[in-house]
Image 1 (cartoon, rainbow, N blue to C red):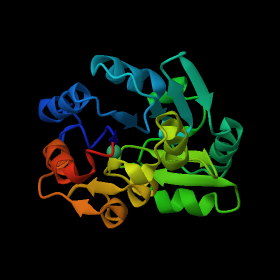
Image 2 (cartoon, rainbow, N blue to C red; image 1 turned 30 degrees about the vertical axis):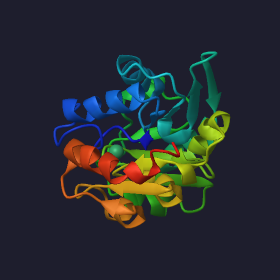
Image 3 (cartoon, protein in one colour; image 1 turned 60 degrees about the vertical axis):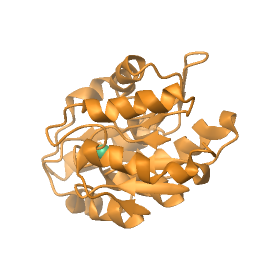
Length: 225
Ligand SMILES: [Mg+2]
């Protein structure tokens, strides 16, 4: 099972929801691997991973970083120089972008506060080899070719699994690739239009309550994951 964090394991106020955490614990107890795939930085993701008692790889920085717990190795899958160049272009064009506080720990991409329309950022960077993705909580500037899906494919290799074998849950445009590739994918009424369109199933409940409903909807895959 592969899950996004913000908007998926959290409630409308971005607080972790104990009902979602309980489901994660139950899956782990049944030895079903639970992978976190987040746009957040590794230190934040790692804290959550530890507190959830997980021992799976972590997809962090929107797929720019992949953490392998077995040998505590971090793989960088996106070139930060391209993202930084994109940021310089935005600043030169006087687009009032603000980097997230967590960018001080970000190693592979640039994340901006969602204070400017993403379409404006995309238009300004149309000539550059960058992907601009929105999560609802941030706008990510990444080297083209990177994202949660390629990182997830890599993270699943040691399990001899592909996204097609997994249940994937997510709420943002940055989850669309994973949702489209998954064997069974779930989004929520609070998800972005793109995430909802890419998912096999949109829950009735919102946020983490939707997560609980969504995991149940994916029970068909349990024997495979
Ligand atoms: Mg999210």
